[in-house]
Image 1 (spheres, rainbow, N blue to C red):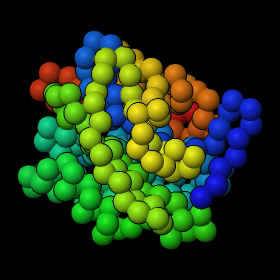
Image 2: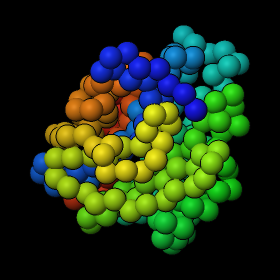
Image 3: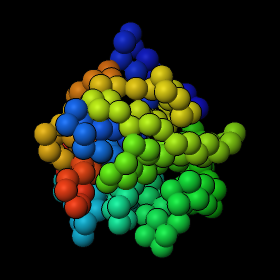
Length: 219
């Protein structure tokens, strides 16, 4: 795995994060950054957010499962953010009653890392509508990591496909948002995310009383 850096700016590829606003609302964040396929957008479809080609970029290369996929899905009290087709089985396992650790581990092991020329990891975040503990997971060519992380007001813990592909407390950003669209926007231009290059689009699920609200943003 490799990424490029330019001073304080870094290319980290796709990003997931688990966060909490200063007002105490939990959030799952997803951001797609890309040098190869920038012509994409995030759209809400049937209670999920999908990454799809822009209307002016409908070609064969943007129809493969590494480029178009569900990025945020809801499953009962959980929101899932992920960088590929593993988002769906994680959400389905959660909806069937599986604990988040099991849902992440089983789906990531079954689908494995992306067998492209970079061996791109699959990453995912599972965030509860209420509660102080979220989960981050990643499967790389060299192993699998699934770990609980603490949610703290005004902060988000992130995981990325390049340069930040292990779960660690040091991958932390300030975080706040008034609504779901603002949460998605924060993943592009707020806190530590602002230093990540080549943003394309983002999505978020932000907790509200009784349900998650979905939001999107375009770079």
